[in-house]
Length: 191
Image (tube, rainbow, N blue to C red; front, side, top):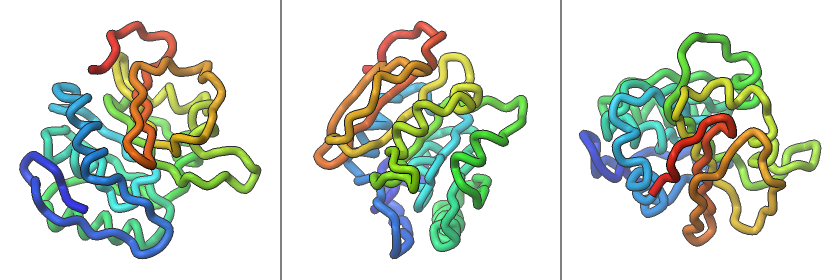
């Protein structure tokens, strides 16, 4: 796995050996191609960051800042190593993504929120993607006109999100990517 483009393009990224399903390079390339100009100067939040590949890709392509939220200690170490390798700057929070979303209290809003949660179900039996889409705190973190990019397993059926509007939905092999905006905003669909 590598950084696809930008100032760190081509640099190989470290990945924790356990419990991580990194976003494939071709999926990353498609995501960032769809986001195009929204990346430059963006404030980025990378939830369930794993190796930090999505946030690092955004920084490499000109994002202003990235905050990586990851609970696993080995994955946090991988993010630190990847930021050092790419010579990019980002902040890392080692905590549960849902706890972060509930407790985040800052005037800063994020232009892009990436979430690549585990495909398994939570301990309570719901899918991580569905739990994220129903979390009322998450839309509050998004800046006006911002985009929430969610990866999920294609076969997982989720209820129509009440808090979000799907602006684009694309399947790449074993990954389905949803591009979402808050349901209050009216913005054109992402190409």
